[in-house]
Image (cartoon, rainbow, N blue to C red; front, side):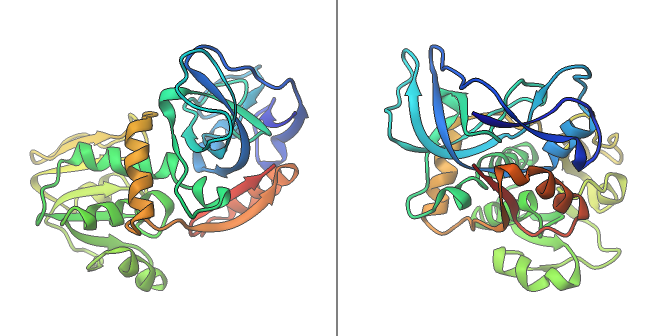
Length: 294
């Protein structure tokens, strides 16, 4: 099968498409025939060597949508089911940017009804990150939340999930994205120096400037593990480290089916065009996710 890997670190030119053996599922695992797989900033980080693994061939891709193709013992899934899943891990020999992917059975959920594989592939990593970040913030309904990077993939899901919970959401985004973030559920855009929020979800990775917008005794959560600023003024700081969670993913799929979460695709690329997709991601300004299709 074909798979997207990096053998040396660097820019988009480091991305390779290689031929490799089809992986076999073990106990409590399933193999998915990949219908589509989203490209995320974490894949660029792996490509650049941010997470280590020098001298190894590293597979790219965390998100996957497709069809169950084979099952291991006690997997609990049936060949032919349409599913989505998160394949967690920065240093792994194969990712989801491939024709087939093996994932743990408890990381899998049924695909959202009515959504094709391309759109479904945008759910696992970004929606789970947003949901788990909101869990860390513990923002009660009616309290105020600022989401930075609100027009991005994680930020957009965070705005929708928070608004659905009855949280008063303010977006930090470009003026050009004002209509977009309001359509996702943000009540308004933040002013240049506005602060005093009960909590901040820093999807734009602004760090201390975002922390300054939290009221004394509030909460800050970032999206890069270990990179959150130090606590100040009694503000609790943390960073989400996304976890594969099939049950939670199923809940998020349910919200997709109810229209609470919007699936946004910025563009599609054939698997053989993976380097081009990485180059587009590096340009910035992507609204939604770029998706690879084998």
